[in-house]
Structures are given as C-alpha cells and as structure tokens.
Length: 495
Image (cartoon, rainbow, N blue to C red; front, side, top):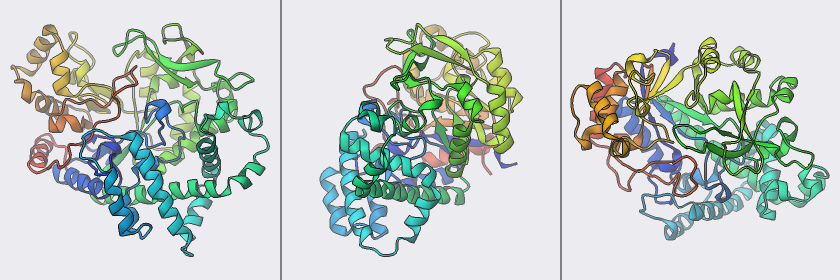
C-alpha cells in the first residue's frame, strides 16, 4: 500500500516559500518548489495548519480563526492575474509592497492581500459566469456560511467574538445581520473560493509528481475562532461563554513552566453525546484537502492538561481523561489509519502508547531528543517501522543551531553514536543521513536543515519572532536536489 512505502519528506510551511509579495504563497514559486522536491526524490511535503491567522495571536497557525477556512494571505497575486481576476496594472502596482527580505512581513501581507482580493472581487462580480463559485458555496455551505458571517463581523467590529454584543455573542438575531452584511459575507466566501481553487491546483500538481501533502491540525481551535463561536456547547465555557479552563502542557523539555496555550478545552462528555460529530466533520474535511494528516498533541486525545482560566503559567493544571478508545474506534471506522500520523511527543505515558499502537497510528521520533541520555527511545536503533523520523519539528531549532546549543556531554553522546566527530558545518547533513537510514517509514526534514539555515520557525512559549522564516530570496535548488536524491537512493526512499 502506498502509505507504507519508505519515503523522504520535507517540513516547510507555505509562508516560507520565497515570494516577492512579503509572504510565501501558492504561486509560481510554490510550483518550482514542488519541481525541486520531485527532482530530489522527496515524496512528502508537510505543511503547517492552513487556517486564517491574526496579529492578536502572533500570526500562529496553531491559533487559527477557523478549522476549515484557508488563510487568504497565501493566495497568489500572479495566479489571480492568470485567472483574469486582476489586470497587469494591479500586479505591477503591488511592487511597492514587494520585499527581498528573508522574513515574512505579516502586517503588510494582511493589508496587501486583502486589497488585491477586493480588486479581484470587483472584477469577478462583473463576470456573469459564476457557476464554479456558486457550486463551491453550495458544497461548502455547512462551514462556509458561518465562517463568512463570523469573518465579516470580526472585520467590521474590530473585536473578538466574545467581545461582541450579547445577542450576537450568543448567536441570536443573526438573520438581520446577514442582510446588513450581505456584501461583506459574499466577499468572504469569494476569498475562500479563490484560496481553495489555488490550493487544489497546487495539490493536484504535487500528486501528479508523486508527492503527498501532509497537513497538520491543532487539537484545539483558538478561543477567538468561528469553531468556538458556533459550537460553544462542546467546550468548557461558563454561562457567559468565558473559558472555565484552558489548554496547555505541564513543564517539559521545551519549558520549565509548561506551555499555556489559552485555548478552551473540549467538553468530551458532550462530544461523546454528539457521537464526536465536530471531529468527524473536521477530519472528513482535512482528508479532502490533504493526503496525510498529522494530529497535533495526540496525548491530549487520551488525557489532556487543563489549567484554570486566568493562570499565568501552565504549572497549576491537572490531567483529565478523554474517551480516547471510543473516539478513535469511530475514527478508524471511517478513515484510513495509514493516513494518520500522531504527535506523540512530550510527557508520554503507557496509556498514550497503548492507544497509538492499538489503532496502528504512526508516531514521531525526533533525533534532537536522542542524545541527552543513554539508550533514549529517540535513538534510531529503538525505532519501529510504523513511525516518522524527524531531525526536529517546527518547534525545534534547526540542526546547526541545536548543535551549537548542546553541552559537551550531549556532543560526546552524538559523536559516539555516529562513530566519529563531525565538523559543525556538516552536522545537518549527518543528521539527514541518520534520519534517512532509520527504519522509520517516513523521514521528514525541516527545509532549514537541507539548506543549512540556523533560523528556527517557532520557539514554544514565546510570541515574538516566530513563523517568519523564508527560503532566501533568489535561492537556487541546483546541486541540493542531487545531494538529497543520492541519499534517498542509498536508503531506499525513492521510487
């Protein structure tokens, strides 16, 4: 079966694609990146969550405003031009926003992409051939209607939904609002129509090259999300819709005070009463836009850490059991377990391992965790085939930066395991080789480690300087693809 074949993959978000429009998008450079992956023998592209981000949540893709909507900043102006939705002057005018910076400029991206989409919308409205748009709205109405209203209200009020007037916050008397905001709602639907038109084209191209797309889904939506506003009953909120408790993780490898995410946690009793309908719809949607899905924070499906609302850190929380066996029994009844990868990192207990193995999900192995102690479970000789090997995830430093930060004891363990001392400028490639040679069915490497960058994507428990990294402007893939393909062929990770 195709999901059990040995494969190499790359971890890189859409935002990291080089682009003259200040943020990576689904335009020509994304297709060029896919050509590079194809030439390299890489057959999996793992992206971060694609949902709409916001400045209020530091542009984190793990605090999306919707589990279903796409982030309009990833829409390509060049593709809008190719589709006849904007003219040459619109495209050229955008150069005042262009940048050769190797960092994403979110403030400019939000403003510019919204402006150019409004021009595209005006042109689209004058086009009488709207059949595809109407079909998209019909097929996706079950989530699109709510999101378009939510997005329009949020843009107009400049407030988060829990700050809205009581009637709106509690979703009463919405019909009159829909009439008042009719134009804004239609524009929001158009944004999503364009996003998924471009995404589907990009995914089709990837698949035609033999490349699978792996998506990622946060376990919890953001408090300020359409998901929570429309489904308050399935979250632990009080009568005023304020969270009673919020999600996070206790102190661990990443942080001495834990991670306080601030997301409301599920009322699993209510989810179970509803036959897990919210998650079944969510997974159905995710598998329609991705080939593989990574479930973030898998241990939270078995037992989750909840912290009283208002706490400043995640230290004073508690573990609460979730009905994991009932939930995943339903999941594997409807979805192919081979298409699911679970993030089983952090404080992992026997019940988490039991659940992962009972349902046959591939877990994650991280090489950067492997050398701090003797016989770590993250050393390659302890892996199983049904796993995914990473050097590091988006929450870890790239290999070169990690190597600079580890102590002498860890360095000795690393060199002892490899069998020789490694020069600093080659450590990334040595870890790529170690990942590719592992028994894990998939070996996935951050793009930073392929090109030798020390810039990390995210530092957990911080809000500044994250989600900014991009492939350097004008980067040439030539020769890099040959080096990667050679390793893919040596270790049997290419067709």
